[in-house]
Amino acid sequence: MRNLELGPSTEVILPTISFIGAGHAVRASGAGLRLIDVDPLTLNPLPEHVEKALRSQTKAILLLHFGGRLDWIQDIAELAKVRNIVLIEDSACALGGRCNGDSYGTFGDIGVWSFDAMKLLVTGDGGMIRIRDDTLRQRVFHRVTLRRRETRVRSGRE
Image (cartoon, rainbow, N blue to C red; front, side, top):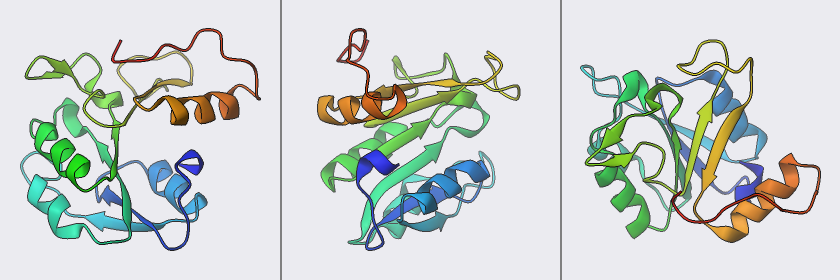
């Protein structure tokens, strides 16, 4: 979140069903947190929930693919793109899942996967991140690798 250059005059949308660490990351960045409702059948937010919550201060949307699915992610991604809002997909619960042939975690600007003991793929701890924008990718890489030179980071939707 800190690499998105958020601040007190900005906000991030987050579904009411999410991991508490996501809300903590938003608040630690200095941004405000705007919680949105979820669909009672899927426990995921619908596009209309996201659209209704958008304000001029909204700079990012952080969605959890609860239950391994978010079939309307393309609609939410298009909404974010049109409004120039960063879409972050927490796809840990949807590892290997697809929507219309594309993998979850690749529709937004950022896709993240946690590999802790409560996830589909367990590595003890840690995770994986996919970032579409090269400049943002470099900022994140330098932060998480203690400013080492980039040698293995790839670009594109690999």
